[in-house]
Length: 259
Ligand code: BGC
Image 1 (cartoon, rainbow, N blue to C red):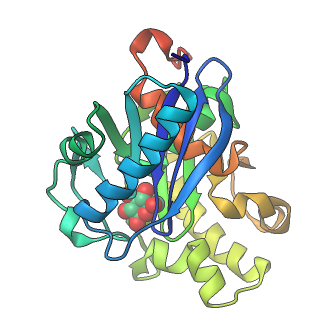
Image 2: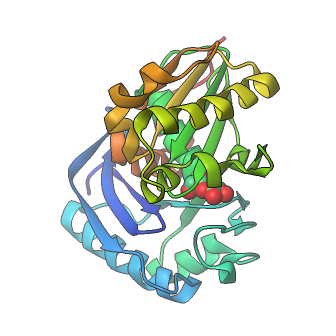
């Protein structure tokens, strides 16, 4: 049996999985990606997670212990919000539903929290003390907040009010694409959002993730903030790696406390 841990990242468009080497914080072999079913209710998503997990467990001879992200708030395995998936998830014990689907223990956590855990352990936030705000800019905006490397889970700062709107409706990458905003125009919206967050949290560092971080040089130079802004380094593997980290036994997790 390999020492890698299986991470699965449930997103609005795709459900992605991979075997994670927790020593080096990277994927072993390729990701497996299946389109998110519609409607994305617990039964349909559970079946896809089961397909992805079974394939990867057999391919990499993984222990049947799984970490899984969810694009909403998750408290003790129970979904509390699912703004970009199916409302049928709200109140559902996702850890129990997915655990039954794959017949293994499943740890479920918010997707941005998972991406942040991975970036702080192995990416752009490695070794960074103080307050780090990781944001994932995709269909929605996810947030993960760290103090000296420790996560405060389920912060949901994508939903603060900005100019009278839900912030993610104004500043997500989805909105940039839908409204065909130039990098500069989108960066103005993003600056407003980051400045608003700065007035609430006074972070030492912002890390921007999501697929759009691959275009960091197009928009980060236009941002006006007090704190430095850096792109995430682990790309679209961050969620998978963070999910695996969350599921790993405590002695296999890198120490994250910095002071
Ligand atoms: C959700 C967050 C999630 C983010 C990215 C937001 O709409 O409320 O929980 O992290 O989208 O998927």
